[in-house]
Length: 108
Image 1: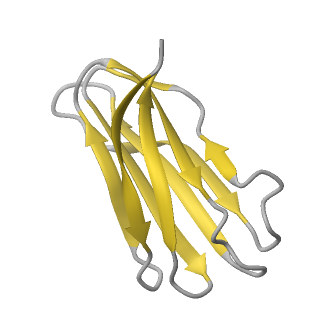
Image 2: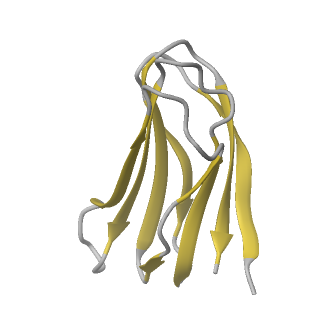
């Protein structure tokens, strides 16, 4: 059974990488982002970073780039990423005007 653990809407600001959510409870998480506000020519990057051992560094576990064409599906789901230490989801608009992106973190 999937459980919503965090959600919100992130308005981009230039090419800043915005942290959407940070989780530390053991589990397998999926990031869902509504990309329907993208305009033709926009490029949006979604990333998941994890620590795999206590005291370790946050390292990239998943990265997806959308654009410069419009996404075929307006909702993007990341791969499920299991954690035992920490999980951080980020969004960055690499190209294009600032816009808002609703998002959710789902425990699967």
